[in-house]
Length: 124
Image: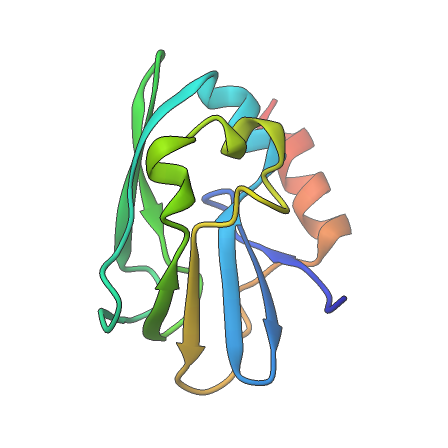
């Protein structure tokens, strides 16, 4: 399994052979509460790091999904449309949201796990 990186907007990303898999962190999922709706990007959508690629709604609030990487969406996890609770149940597995063919590398703005945990602790 490739290393997981994180953003300060609580997305995670892994990359393998030029394809990034993106989702939200367990912290983000717990803060949202029960997820009831997810809007995911269309295949082929071009993204820059920092672009909004979808929306996630819970019983508490709605949030934009922010792409941690630049590239082209090659797959969206359409299973989440009918089963959005997978984000709460398994945010790092079955709750992934999009696969993006990378346009370059991951970038310097991402945090490793220790850096992300420190960031979350400082926010609480």
